[in-house]
Length: 201
Image 1 (cartoon, rainbow, N blue to C red):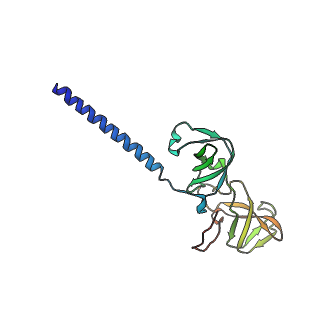
Image 2 (cartoon, helix red, strand yellow):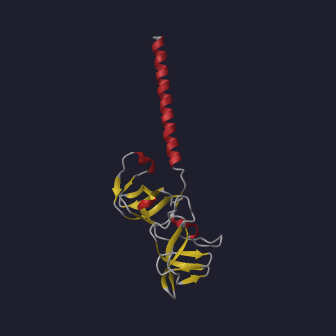
Image 3 (cartoon, rainbow, N blue to C red):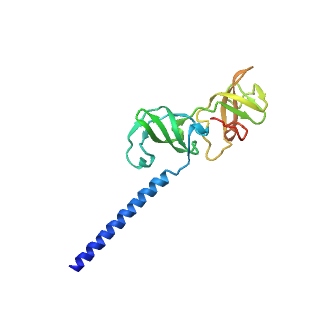
């Protein structure tokens, strides 16, 4: 009898330990999942909308991605709530608005398009072209200034590997030649602001 009681106590202790371990593991996984860097469109570092170029599974929580999705979104423009940082990575998590409520998606950059920034700061003399063809003669040279962006090549945000100097085409508006194209390094696409000034994407 004493042996049976002892065995029962050991069994209860073992079950309690396993339960505690499982609780710890679930808590740790959830905590770690919540810790990846994110930002919001209001910060100016994440776009406010993205275009899905392929069917995209969605999840109620991004840590559920190991299981079946809740559904699949067809290619469409979606509004961003939160974006993983850096948002232009090869794969990235986004929290988006849908008609089913806010959902999480994981999108490969090749299946994504993002509007370019509304303006960029040219930091040096920059040739402009009538078409996005570097072999053409430039129509003019712009001195350093801020210019309005009206278009871009597809996936202007994607680097070749880890090369931030990848050259990208942006279409800008000029008052004297109409819309023209510039070709600048990816790491130069942005605006120069005073440190205390809030800027937007």
